[in-house]
Length: 97
Image (cartoon, rainbow, N blue to C red; front, top):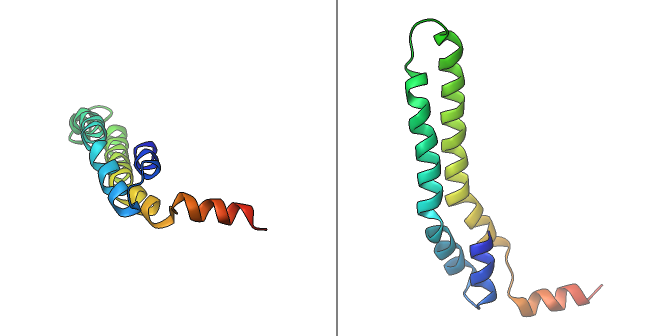
């Protein structure tokens, strides 16, 4: 969100700010999630003592990381672009009661 807000304050249109903000954070978000998911893959395919606990835990964590990554890269920038207003309109809206 900070990258999007910075581009909006620089005067970029909301849709362009959302796309540029999301792509600027793409590498950091993907590598963080990918490293964690790759760490849980052996647990997801585990067999042996304790596997009945490890498999469901790893499945939930992998699903949560995947969902959170998609939300961070796709959904949140779309919301930011949708609900952001130019500074002039926001100042007028804040002034009127």
